[in-house]
Length: 197
Image (cartoon, rainbow, N blue to C red; front, side, top):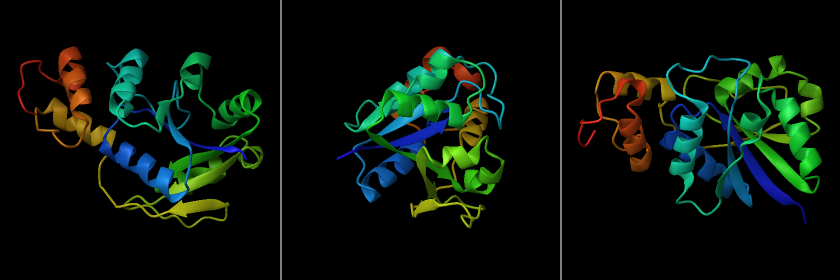
């Protein structure tokens, strides 16, 4: 029997409870063996916010998932460098793990973007896409996408960066260990001395 692995890619800048919830819901809905969080080195479709290093993003993901026995980090795009085209990444992973069945998890925004993905037709031979609903985005597509309903939460990394920059609370929006790391490193304009935020 093939191992069933979910891949959740993203900038994770920072990783928040929305990411964790998506991974957990898909893990259980599809009875996967594990979900790997895969930080993008250089996503083709968006800019990475300045002032945070790749090491910081990797460290924050490790902290966010360390208490879950079926969550792992997949560093392949960080190790490879350059633009993070999913087709190239998944081709490498399939070569490395030919007996693994990969489920690539995407949000509603990315479902709409599928026609523009690099070598999408060949990518469909390598992975099964899993789409999760996101507020304000449609999940209707002509591409083969398994849909998993998840509780809707209107949360994004950009919103969290904005709140930290304004010294608003992010308690319960991020894992406590990630909040501590952000304060320690003073990321996103945070203040080390801020308490219970």
